Length: 336
Image 1 (cartoon, rainbow, N blue to C red):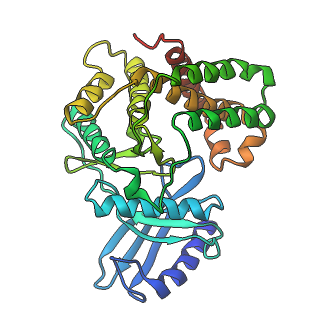
Image 2 (cartoon, rainbow, N blue to C red):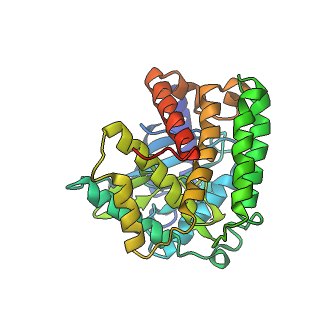
Image 3 (cartoon, rainbow, N blue to C red):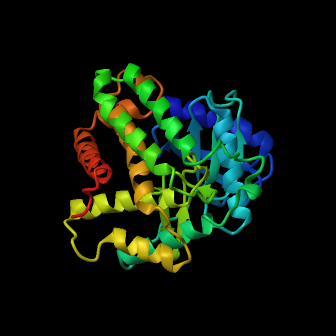
């Protein structure tokens, strides 16, 4: 509480001198409260920010505090601003502070989307698929100066996974030999990638229902920290992997959410070429993160929310089940 109070005081000084673009001018905004939000990320802290503007209106906003990465804060701000300018369903962004001098860390202030209940799950799935198709229409040239192509895709992604494997061997509480099977998966996917022809677009990089807020019939997409220029099928594959896991937990053998999502994505014009390859790639990428979560070691120093998450025994059990599911995807055993 003391920390939040100090942050609120520092934020009031900052907003008092600058205001919030598109919401309130300098001197026309007052911080009413600032507290940790119920949903937290691994590499950033989310706060619910309540402010009053001239005339007494109360606005609920989201403040995202980054872990000493001003470039990442600016990148997400620019991605969201671009998407919003194209009328895509994402939160409005009001401010970004890169230096970390105001609150001790860089931060981003954005709109809090007010969630509305859907009549049935199918509506949320359908809206999430439609939003993703719209996002995938953005071409690399439209993102110039915001996101840049890293190299040949998906080879650069596999290269990143190799680097992540090497780091994990030394910074987690596991023997290096425990990662040998993952190295084999990477090599196998490298071989498969020779027959993959990528179409480059903007992707979210972490597209699960936990990063979708359903409001007024639309699926608003949040948390753009992992956005990059890559093949859109990766997002579809990631979403399918997570929805299939949810289907398993719920015991659904018919009317599966994963099937609904895939059908809707294709119906709205999305393509899913090389889907099975990308499901394996998405599974491997998430598996390596889960290894870090379950056996953190020194890695917990670098991932802010890690300690809190893994103190929860239910979370550990869930991550263990997800790990088994993703291994099944890699082995081609994901079907129920």
